[in-house]
Length: 186
Image (cartoon, rainbow, N blue to C red; front, side, top):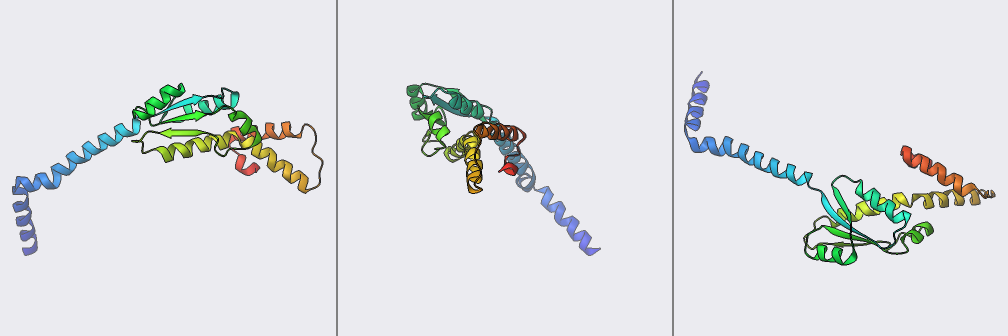
């Protein structure tokens, strides 16, 4: 009984002070609302990316289309000069340059030093963009890799490779990519 009386007395004293009530209850609620609103607005903003397509082939257009379909990324085609100025002025997060010969390198299976990504000095997302773009390039160039895996397997087994084998393997690979079963195929 004495414990209950003491507890009620202490609570009455604590809640009688408006500053305590404001510091312990109202202030955290206000701060939560402000930060929640700020984070919500930040998540809705699309990250601007300019793309300079110097190759202008089916493969480069496919890469641009794949990047454009990503949520949170706003992709726009641009000229090299405009892209450089926009990155320098921190108007966009980054500019991606697809050099001429991109498609030829993809068909050869060479993806090293394939693209150039110029990020703004204020950009915190360069690592994210690099990984996102690299993932799309590897996904789009997967058919070359798939053919090499099949070709190596057939050669190891000493089997002859039929003339139309590459077309059939790539057709099957693309069918599985659409079903997202590539991991089980390879």
